[in-house]
Amino acid sequence: MTLIVTTWQRPVKAWLFPPAGLAKFEQMCYYRRSCGGQFPPWFSGRWHTMKPKDVKRLQRLARGLRVRPIAKDMLVVESKSSASGHHIVTIHYDENGTLRCRCSCAWAAHGGYGCSHVMAALAYLAEKRRRAISFWPTREDAERQRNRMLRLVGSQSDDENGLWITTRPLRQPA
Image 1 (cartoon, rainbow, N blue to C red):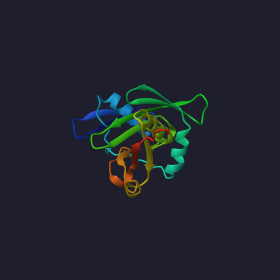
Image 2 (image 1 turned 30 degrees about the horizontal axis):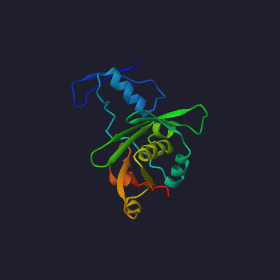
Image 3 (image 1 turned 90 degrees about the vertical axis):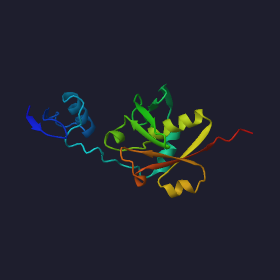
Image 4 (image 1 turned 135 degrees about the vertical axis):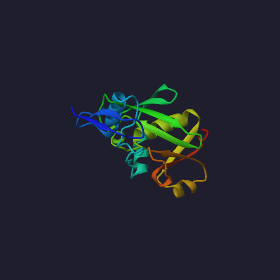
């Protein structure tokens, strides 16, 4: 193992390089465990995030996924790619109507957000509150619906980088 001494807004700390082949998030976790909870010097606070391109197709896929809650803000969503696989979705609500969701799928592990598992989990929670939700790629598309709007973001918080969610009451069966 190589030992490197570096300065980064704190006193000099020694850092052991993480094993090769780890994703950025895993590297950061490895670093934080070995250096007392500090972020690594190469971490700028902003991950490269990937926004889904075909939001409506993902929304259709999400309708067929089974969801099971395991905590107030944590749900297990089935995986279509493997019969015995499940993904954990964690939801964090900000007070300004912004949602930050994390998933354990491969898309999210490589910086993506707004996967079908997250959409299925949010739709499940909305249905429990007798609401229906729709996902939109831009704010303009969501504003045309004239319903309450929420924003789903990755690790970056700029407006153009989020998915927009509209919510409305569920229709009562006749």
